[in-house]
Image (cartoon, rainbow, N blue to C red; front, side, top):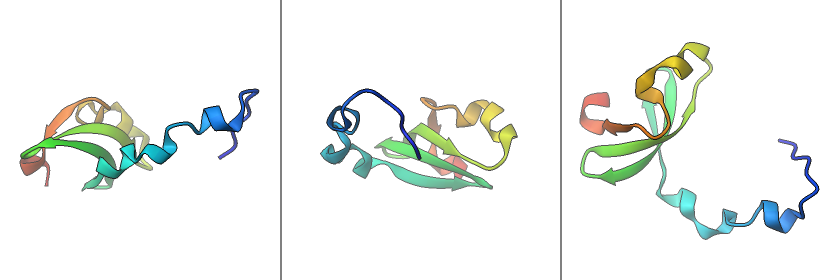
Length: 74
């Protein structure tokens, strides 16, 4: 990944070492991979969708910010 910016590197990378990504989990649903933030028992919030299929990005159940029930998705 290339990042072209006039901002100093320290400002661009600020917050990466805080460990916020340690709480995220990867969830595989079919051929789609979701990065989710666990909210509690059987619930998670979608943070990011990683999929090679463009049609997955149009599905409302994969939208970032959506709360999903993990028991029904696995």
